[in-house]
Image (cartoon, rainbow, N blue to C red):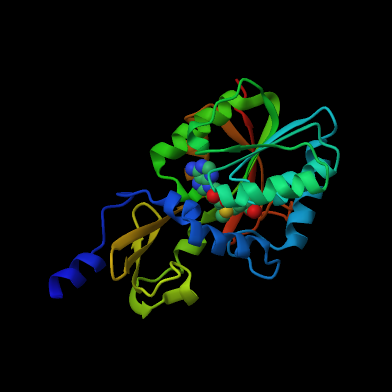
Length: 281
Ligand SMILES: C[S@@+](CC[C@H](N)C(=O)[O-])C[C@H]1O[C@@H](n2cnc3c(N)ncnc32)[C@H](O)[C@@H]1O
């Protein structure tokens, strides 16, 4: 028992494991996540519907998007942004996600509303397309869940997919959020109201901070009668300089910074949002 608990609560090396697909693609967990996405009161998987409405309105007017524009949303989930973009008459709207459950929902909604939206199921790190887009979006701080080499891969993909005057819109967690995080370990039966499984389980949850890297980890070790499995939820937090540095390495630069993707003025906060373009020569 001592050894098992020690192993389950040890702080692993930073970015040592990537389990995002379990979180988003496991059938039971995917259903729980979809319910979170679609609950306008809960800001856990998506933001409130009022926020999404305001965000799409702002992006369309700020970027002058219209029936000739091409947009692509990385990690589109149930299509909250893609659906609204297409309903506003945007020409080409593409959504990418590896959650089958969320994409099924998104496609059904598009069909019901007779909106011609293109959805692709798969890992967006492997996505290829020869088109160039006026707007590439990655919303709800999903960039923060990727390790440094995945972020470099994604940004270089964005670089080739971005039209000459196109814009990448993304939001990230900041150092101010990191500074508030505390380390802890808890044990609970059927933790988070049965979120992890329909069957009984014990969950050991450990929260770790990696101060030098501004990374946090929520490590979940889930023990059931027949198996034990783990989920690692890493989050990179950024200073403006860190983000600028990662973008510059891929020939990209920040055009404008905000507090959120509704265009709220930039202020020191737990999140920030940026509009990114090709780096000027
Ligand atoms: C926090 S949710 C945000 C969803 C949506 N952007 C929103 O704000 O409503 C992240 C989404 O990204 C998807 N996702 C995460 N990593 C992915 C990857 N590597 N490839 C494809 N989809 C991914 C998840 O399935 C999930 O739907």
